[in-house]
Amino acid sequence: MHTRRNFLKNSAIVGGLLGLPKVLSCDTPTPQTKTDEPLIISTWNHGLPANEAAWKVIEKGGKAIDAVEAGVRVVESDPESTSVGYGGLPDRDGNVTLDACIMDETGNAGSVCFLQHIENPISVARKVMDDTPHVMLAGEGALKFALENGFEKKKLLTADSEKAWREWLVKSEYKPIINVENHDTIGLLAMDKNGDLSGACTTSGLAYKMHGRVGDSPIIGAGLYVDNEVGAATATGMGELMMKTLGSFLVVELMRQGASAQEACQEAVMRIIRKLDYKDMQVGYLAIDKTGNMGAYAIHPGFNYAVMQGGKNELIDAKAYSN
Image 1 (spheres, rainbow, N blue to C red):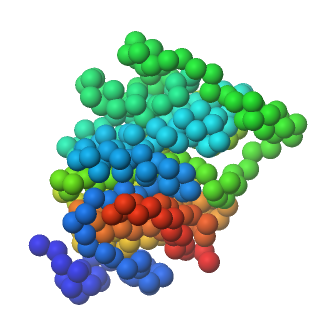
Image 2: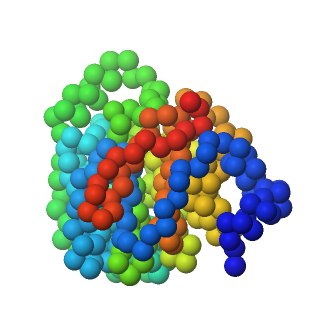
């Protein structure tokens, strides 16, 4: 059985395999708090209302999988959140396309990508998980499945988002903006009263992306990963970087090898730093382990996350590599 003492004692061996010495030489890890209480953690400011909705499920003894779905649906339905769901900024052709995935405590997962006209893609992903033999449905197939299962077709491009798109069309210049409006993907992880873990991740993707582009959010192992024996992780930011490193899966596997949730998030960021061109791009990781310890780390400052426990909901600034 791995212990914290053995992990540190054997860091040279583990580091040779996983690169952990660079993690341990980064910022001092966030203090870890062991808990037997339910816990919800989610990305960005919009995580606060998402946590509230998820907590209502947990508080009544509900399952983590139901909580994560309920939580991110709040953000998907908020027209003021221009990077998720209804009101999301469109691609360069003016189409709002949505990506989402969900994963429960048994390892089951569902996902949709390049989905249009459906306000709550997370619930379509849940339906894929529960009612089909598949993990992912895409594009027209995902829309057909949603409509056949009672989801309402809706215009997702709001007046404000359309106005912003038409202003962008004047120059049609594409350049990612770090921490734009403190909004991005919402990833939400929950531990229920039984100690079971689940996660959800949903987004409208990069504003003004090429039509057909899909990011990390619907990809199990990139935008989200849950292993009920070990922990759960989710990601936000430039999806291409997470896809190239399978960051959420990496975080969970590092925890399996003995790293704390914080150390695992830091190493996942360092994997990007060492291998990819990251300077104009943001990535942030969140994680919780099986005992309720939390981790959060980003490439650049400005990434924050919402934590709810014991009825208290608060926003915390994550540590970052480039200060």
